[in-house]
Image 1 (tube, rainbow, N blue to C red):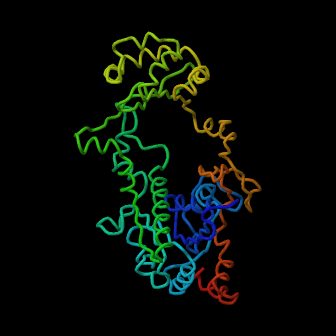
Image 2: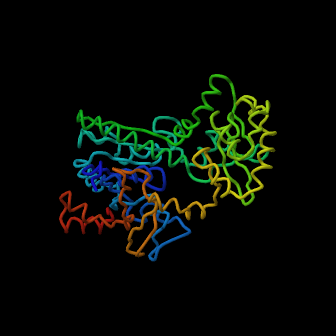
Length: 395
């Protein structure tokens, strides 16, 4: 398969979630991603449970590190820096998702590397940025969900604030990191001059506030939580209870309202003045919810989905196991199987990106330091030099 980033080499001093998630996209699109890990223990994600393979390899680690190579290297040593500089000579980008004050301490900024390779792109994904009073602060996804207002926007109105069920700020930041890297890489290919690219968790989270932010900044409108995870200004666009579980129905734009009423056999609702316009439906949301509840609870979800799908946006509210056992995922090829030294077959999620209609290929995440010797030989170190660095704890 012809992959768009084949031939590009990316060095990544990455750990845990946000950085590895971003470089995962690049690795699956063909880039050679060399993952630099501390010689003792490697990426902290390798120790994240509760599920491990035979020799202690974490299934969590597999999530974010498919298609990568692992090089153990102590960047705090002079010899480690020498190895880094040799790598950078033949690389296109250097990535890290370390605390904001750390990249400069271990030589990962453009000012520190442009003498080695003027076209190198240095990408930094930190918690709060590298150039402010919070640069030294450690930070994690859940903190950003709290400070950026996500928790206050999530959950039922009379319940406590809630975070999202997944570390979405990590994933948003990693994706934005990849976008910034690719844009700077294009420019460096044209001009021969690289740069620093910065993205931080808090800025990424705040940016996702999107239209509620614009509403507040311009109109003083503070978006509130709405029952049933409903849309703040469009209705009916929320969860409803069918006979056997919950479903999400989204008559999100005006054209879907009469279609919904017709498909469920209650066209009288379209003539009701309480629901005759989007504004009227919003003003009478509670009454409309009660009427639709009484209708939807009469039949199971499969019945309503069969009636509505393709006509009105509708989806079942699945538990995690139901979501992953959904036959549709097999139809669209969203699961792949990879081989690993500790298990013959590991099921992984495929990339959401397709090239010429095909899902991108995947291979298992590397064992710690699995590629160290090969990578060092590729950049000119002989067997004795590699053994010496291993003995000294540099790799």
